[in-house]
Length: 423
Ligand code: BJ8
Image (cartoon, rainbow, N blue to C red; front, top):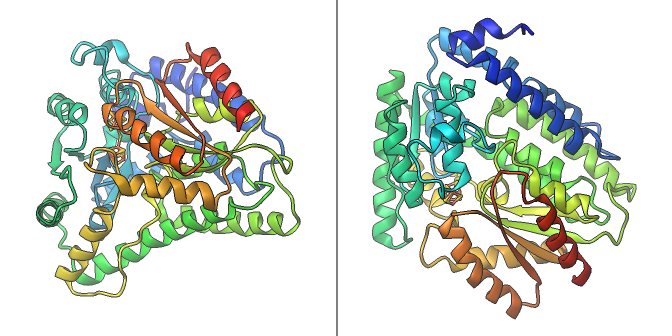
């Protein structure tokens, strides 16, 4: 079947047949997981539209911007300061890596027991299935977990990659190192774009990204209401789309959605009846279209009220200080903000436990489901400490490890249902 975007996808070197197959599967998935939900807010129509055009309109916009001279930067981690990319009048895309795609290609280079997210970014590229990746002028990797850092060395044979050094502790020396990295990144972005990052441009970019964070924080806060005004699946989708939609347009649409949700809360209206078990998800990021666990949890009769995740609150909670205007001070403020992200690659990482506890209390969660991608050592191992800490705080936790395959849906369902029974 021909598609109106075929020419564009061909120019981006996609495998058209395999790509059509991917979009068909994605469409079916979306129908079952999203469109079949009851009582969705009207504002979700915008998200449905964005997803229906996931590889269409947005790619067309990006292609047009590229023809006008804009550069595109792809990222895989929330440690890469988007403000710097936007300040150079470039486009920042958080590449998703949330599907089991091109595994047979990826496994030619990576051990089978590699985390699904890493396999997925290589798989998407090698199977020629991601128009976002193929639109990038530069991919920004980072030294977070060992799997990612080593995989970037392989990825570099297929795409130009620049690596930012993210330290693994939060000592003063580590912070100094990251401050240096922020400056080095700024120089790189200026060199690739040919645009100088002025103080005014950086300040405007800081305010823009903060605005998007504020609206997502507003959404998170609204979810503390009982009954929950929006499903966890929809909230996750919003956080996922934030990584690749135009930041201004996205923020405006989510503002409107939040207005609608606040009205719902005022009317005491929810997506699930009062008394529905409330779950907080914590752990590895869930990138598009990784909706498996939320689907299982909500399909088992609970409602997800928050995500302690990089596709969730870990990416939005802290803002960059807007009270400084000098270049050096703004770069310091960016460093401070990013070094407060409590990713499991840091050691020690107690603040993450405090975040989870606080979120569970604020969002009135009955329990926490800790999600680690299979073979993700930082999160799987850290979950032991999280479990011990939450136990002391009287908050029940279920630890799950899974990948992107659908093979373990039944056993996962059984474990989730058993957990919901006891909380
Ligand atoms: S700041 S969570 S986005 S590194 S799941 S690839 S850690 S083996 S994604 Fe992450 Fe940045 Fe941290 Fe957030 Fe490795 Fe684990 Fe795979 Fe992971």
